[in-house]
Image (cartoon, rainbow, N blue to C red; front, top):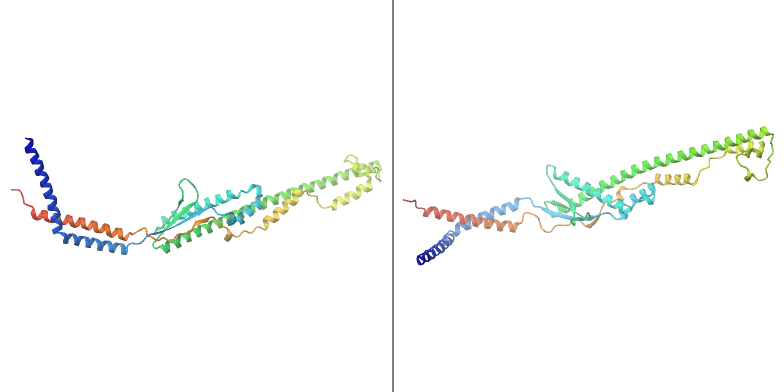
Length: 326
């Protein structure tokens, strides 16, 4: 029983070998048909890669601007609010964050237009906010490079204009604050002058009532508000005239406020000198296209052509050798 089974297994193995050889022989005899399929597939692939739109990707790497690139903005903010309230590094980080947001918005707009454009921005190193990698996919290497540079400049100019508008708003707000402060100090100084005149007038009344015309003290620095009438009515009348024509007296804070006001009024930042980013790597001129991959496409087409050709040969032979069961 075992001997017969072994013979049956060997017989099956021989049958499989014969079938495989037979298949290979069929394919060899139908090599011209397979070749025709391969040629057709390669021709179709050649036509495809010649008419399909090419895709090239240009890449740039950017980071936060140098201090000098936003010096006009930071200097203006320092004049407006004082050096102690302005952090240059914080401004640089906020500027590049604003640039990234505006660039993402532009990328989304281009993606959703009738003829979509592939513009992207992302972190160069995962988990780190900077530097940023920006890419653009165009129909030629030069086009991709030029468009990427154009969109980076476009967003940069947009942020510069926004910074300029931000400065204008801050300047207007700060000028209003300083002007209100000056008005308050002027009002206080005027009230102090009026109070001084009122005090001298009251002392004059006391001096006249007491019949004191001439000074009764030797040292005027010893005179207090309560003993001011001792200067005599003649001196007090002269003091009233002088106080009335005397300019207001202000503290040092008043003049520092004025100086700050004048400095801020002279601020005229130029948006053209503001930049929201710094290049780590400028837009590249790509050496290799993303698609179509001509060699790979032709190779895959040839393989597919060979597979379809082989299938056609086997199906043809199977149909020829088919014998219906009796």
